[in-house]
Image (cartoon, rainbow, N blue to C red; front, side, top):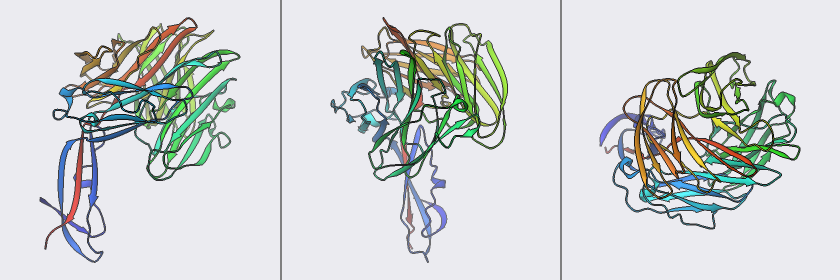
Length: 471
């Protein structure tokens, strides 16, 4: 072991061990002596594959499914060996998941699904949940990622329209209680009447908070979820009906963080213009620029606006031709943003929220579902600088297809992935990319639409241990 310096007993110093999250995950333990002792501490660091991984799916109102996928074997830090995978909360139990493949399991209504994997299957695990609602009173395709808990995240949905309701689902996957505050932000700031503070969740508990109907000042509602302790797994479902006609349904589970440069791939324009919704978490006013960029690199919408600190705002991106776009939001202070797309302007439609996609510098993936009527998926890649990315798609047949694409700055690339069960993205060389998957389908009643960002996966973990030096 290598000497690391002098620390006073009773203080665990782990910063020097490099706690890095995302493609690398770190855990740390410390052995200390009595408070009066001063010792030379040593660091013993080992790196290896992730051997245990758990992702939480918040569940849905109706019976649905959970999809899981294992990273391509060639991307793993070493040859994947053995392992188990199961969905706790599913009657299916064990997942028939193989290395580099995908599998699914049933998820009953109002039940949390916990995807737990061990051994080689834990390396690069990704998972998502799906609900296909075909009821006459509520209709839509909802897809969301299964994730690890968050202590702070922003979610988009709901509005002041009659018949529109936002439901916030909270799950505590930890072994200790957690307390959650949900602040609803509008054009006049935080609406205390609509917000819900101090929701206590026992270990393993799931709660659904109905946050609608919103008043006129919450037409651009943005919900900030803050949790204590180990955090909370959260998702927001936006359900919209006009009289007896379903406008659509969407669920988002990716906790958005504030940034000065936000990239939102996977935005769809139809006869209904995409609607941008944003919020300024801080107290300073934001000067915000919003651009919709086509796959030809053309900036087809360019708006500059100011938004007061601590408030939210919304506007339509009118005039866009039907197709796929990336939306880039830049500001002089950190903001959060998302874009809602609809499949039409009248009759039975569906809606989807495209949220900010992280800049990927390492392997990332999304697990997708089979069974969407006339379903087809496409992957959009966007970049703020020149980048290249390797894409691996896992088909329903189990076959993998690998390709490499170049992504130019502010010129998104769309790759058709058909009925893929999973898609993997890995930047090649320098540069980062942002990625999202959009799934479309239709039946005799109308169209379906859902979008999920592609999220980083964990391949390695580093364990850091502080021990007293020998005298």
